[in-house]
Length: 297
Ligand code: GUN
Image (cartoon, rainbow, N blue to C red; front, side, top):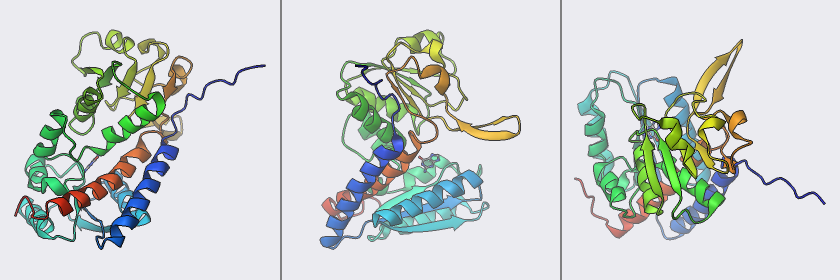
């Protein structure tokens, strides 16, 4: 009798649906205690991709029973106006999560804006207090995409302790927090980036590869150890002939025969990011119940 081939595809849509189901149950329980979790999303300008992301976040929140509010500000909004809005939302006890969609227009200082958000409402996990807490291995609000990647890895591999993980990319949104989460899970972690020497050789030593560089199909089978688990965070639009389509940072067709498991693009990491934003909104609401005084006034 033939044994069936192991399932290599990591199904991010199914994993995200499980997270959303957990969130819905917990939101309902919280509402029974008289707390209605609420998320506010701020978009400055008209970047088409950001508009789609923001819309999806708001729709997903509504589906979970989380009250959501969208602030769309013109591209020429001053930094002072944006900071004033954040100040109002910080002081509003009925708002539990605040997310400012990035990138911001060039005239606005991103760091100043992210630092203005109350750390207890920082559902992106980008405030320095949360970044610092994560690097100390504390349970804090954690960036959504890396948190989603961790869930996919744990679902696929169980205990990650002692595994060698290579993270390709060192962004504040994915690469750095991903490395911190892998360390917290007792992995040996190597972070490689555009200036790394021997990128491919380092990657070939990995039990886990997380690719987050925004370079279409950079990683192919030649970069991978047989049996590696690959998480592809890249979402790159490419044009082939007349058609345009989305591809990851990994050459999926080349990698598939060699790996133990891999996320597709789309349908891998993408749905997990929004699912973990919902989970973070719930966590933020809980944190604020435990510490009802706003930490920034
Ligand atoms: N832009 C791209 N990814 C993100 C994200 O995770 N959070 C925010 N706020 N903006 C983004």
